[in-house]
View (spheres, one colour):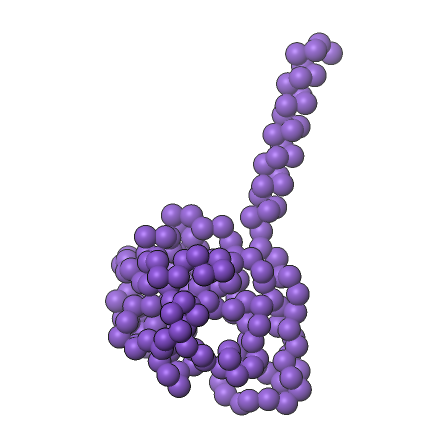
Length: 181
């Protein structure tokens, strides 16, 4: 085998390893678990007593068409969002187009006050990032007794859902794409 052939094979192997490890690094895997207290708060969306929930320190990479699941959140005082929003320490009306992003996408508050573009059902809307949808903690009062969020969650106000034309039985866990605006 010639020196050129060996160099080409070595380069191909190096590229294969580099691209394989990059692809694996893009996979967001659970980083741990959170066990709900054996007894607890009771509501439709509350943690189930004794249930074990996965936790995540990461979210999938952000692109121009980041795939996510959109969920409904009430950011108002007394709503299912729990405490005031992390970004500004305030509650928000359901008429405001605001979102909470999964921990990895929230990126320690780096997206606070920034807008994202959400796409669904052939429509697009801008929404302001005001909170973190915590993927590491939950099942307690600050998290409205809800489980940790999934790693790919965009928790949106009713105004966002309305602007996208998503109503009634479609509201819940809805597949979307999003990007930084």
